[in-house]
Amino acid sequence: MNIFVCIKQVPETSQSVKIGPDGASIVEDGLKMVINPYDEYALEESLRIKERLGKGTVTVVTVGPQRCQEALRNGLSLGADEVVHLCDPAFDGSDPLAIARILAAFLKTQQPGLIWAGKQAVDDDCAMVPQALSELLGLPLVSEVKKVEFTADAAAITAHREVEGGVEVVSCPLPAVLTAQKGLNELRYASLKGIMASKKKPIKVLAAKDLGLDPATVGRPGAKVRIRKIEYPPARQGTVRLLTGDVAAQVAEAARIIREDLKLV
Image: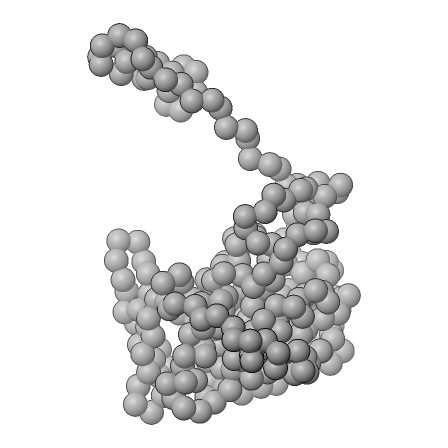
């Protein structure tokens, strides 16, 4: 089975992020970039599926600038067989739909048995690329998967997906697009041997012309969504401690603060 994992490189979430001079982007200089955490679960599950089946390949693919090759090499160090970098200045400014178009153009030239991605990226939280990708490829989609099982002939799957208040169990023929939820598996660490081997493996780089893409359909020209402004969240107000009076008076004062000062009700 040929398994493809779509990943995104995002800022490590413990860092302080600065808004750029344009007010609609962040300053990336000095930021530590990592594989999107949900995509890590997707990659781990792909590696486990290959190990269980005893055959197949795992290919990691990403869309982005040159810095994304670090994330691809991390994928190789964990056990991916191949990595593909879809990189072109024409891709700059792509929104989720344009990113899906780029990925779809590549995947249509392959024979995927299964396509994985994280349920969302932790930088923009759009959760739109896998859904658009499944539509463009004409493949079924199962999102927020926490467990997956294969039929004996590996022609279909049964997936357990997280829904509000419980777990939904669905069956789906392959090929399909699946998105990974936290809890799907336990992540492995790259071995020293894997890290050293990843430095020697080639990264396949494809541009818009290699994919047969019209530049007008990707990047800023093809984007349907544009970020106009990014703002910091409002500063937290200081804690109010009610230390005087009996319990009834404290409750009354707390209600007044919520109603009049904070205007939450």
